[in-house]
Picture 1: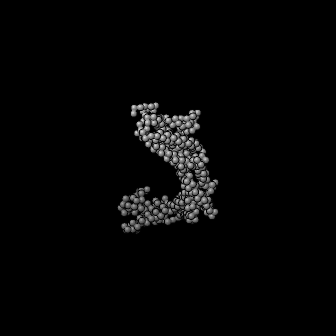
Picture 2: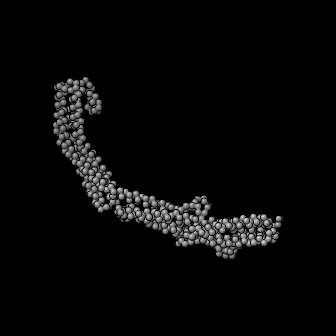
Picture 3: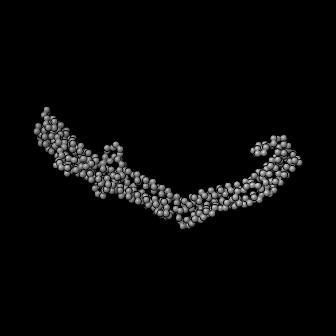
Length: 440
């Protein structure tokens, strides 16, 4: 057309019609979005909630944003309606109509009262001294998009936290109550057992967490890094997850106590059997020590201690705990007693082995003497006077009481040396390993 005005070239009819169609589509999309925001469950919850902290601050700003959004939308609607009315005056718009439409569609033709300082984070309708602010339709759409995105982000974030955390907290609290009842049934109570104290702490933490989540959901929202989409992020479940793990630990402890209640009698019977076997073994060791002292001369025999009275006392305490259903006290005591009873039986067996070692040495010497006598007999030397003399000397020492093991070993060695010489074999030296001596 070649004609220009304050906003640039005057639009022709086709340009006006295309602009009106585009603006109409934008108007419809914006209206749909605003109505969806108005009906959003999160927005309704925010309106009725007693908010605190960062959520209260953000919602105050968001409410102002939503109010301003509708003011902008009403102004946008009025401007669009005015443009459509001008275009509808006549089928072929006059030059004056096109100039007016160009100004409406491209110029700063929309006036919004007191909106000069409106921003996504601090919108106001009353303004800060300026009575009004003028926008182009494009600027108004951009401003509405900013306010809508920030408002929706806040509403979606709060709704996401409310949808995720309170229900999970309630389920965990119900599980906590079941665990508390079970704990009380086995004597696990606050002040008496660490697990009971843990249950009290978890209860307090969950109660406080739920109150905070309901009143200040945004305090438990983690925005997604680098995301500009409304509602980008996730609920912060750190505290919830920590308490869930703590409750699981307590449940395992309660299960262990329940197992003790079921198996207590069998474990006590086993403990009594272990300590009884240890006592019998120690008694056998004391008896063997007397025999060794009577039969073996010049031998150091270790002293055998008596049965541990402390273990018997603790076993009686464990039985008392069981009678009074004090399972939380019985559990650690049984664990300790079982290990100590095993250790006591092992100590008793080691004492018996140490005490009877001289008798084992004497038995080995007797066996060696008889083995060589049999070997000599197989070679027809059983009647040799020297061998008979040395055999009788060694046998008297080994079968006499008390027996001097060092002297008896020398006597057996002399008989062995004489036998190997007569058999034409190498004479073993004193101190040589037994397997080399056996080569004779």
